[in-house]
Amino acid sequence: MTTPIIAICNHKGGSGKTTTAWHLAHALNADNNLDAIRRVLVIDLDDQATLTNRLAHQAAAIGSPIETTPTIADALDGAPTTIYHYTPVLSYIPADHRLSWIAAKIQATSPNHAHLMRALRHIEEYFDYILLDCPPSAGIIMINALAACTHTIIPVTPTQESWDGRNRMETMIAEIAAILAKPIHTLGAILTMRSPRSRNQDYYEALNAQAGLLGAIPHAVGLDADQRIYAAYAPIAARLQHTLAQEA
Ligand SMILES: Nc1ncnc2c1ncn2[C@@H]1O[C@H](COP(=O)(O)OP(=O)(O)OP(=O)(O)O)[C@@H](O)[C@H]1O
Ligand SMILES: [Mg+2]
Image 1: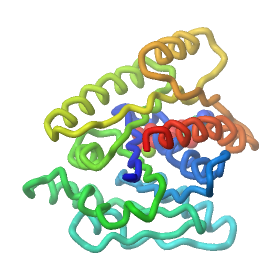
Image 2: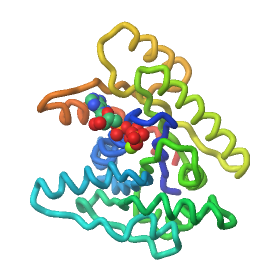
Image 3: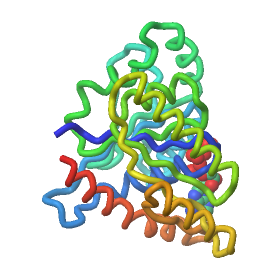
């Protein structure tokens, strides 16, 4: 079975990509009546390094600081791919600001879309799922993510901008799949930061009808926000596990 490589993507910034990657990375480890704990690798593909900073912050808070260099930028640039372990079953590849410079550099290579694919080639087999936390741009890093991925998930906030970002993303996914002559399976959309206002219901129903809604995440604030957000991602992770197990 090939490892599902899931690109979490939307062209609109702030649509919940990193939050989705973070919580799904944790929730996909769970057994959920499968035969074993699942091994997850999450890769930060954003030069803003939000996911990396979150991992580092969380690790420092529990008194076990993590390493964050070398990064995915080095792997894309041709160095051996370095993987770090956050827990025994959750691994990560960090990013940092140099990713924007490496992106400019690999843009000029040929073929320029296959660097991430190459960086993952010999490590895929060690994981049950690989998650790609994509940047909000349509540049060469996003193209590399789509070239390397097998599946996509699109987080959408209940706003017109995020909805438009999803549409642009779907067009790009279809175009890259056609150019590279490879299937990219859409696992569905996740409605993120949903609040109980009527307009939100429109997006919920539209996504449900058009995009295979995987679930909705409440807009949560306050001390228990993280637990409430995680609780909403857990059933989505369980559904994904079963969907992907059926595909295998
Ligand atoms: N369910 C939620 N409830 C409350 N706040 C949330 C929720 N999901 C995400 N956020 C917050 O919204 C902001 C944007 O989320 P996130 O960083 O996940 O989006 P993104 O799509 O990765 O952004 P970018 O395009 O900049 O990479 C963050 O400050 C995050 O903490
Ligand atoms: Mg992000």
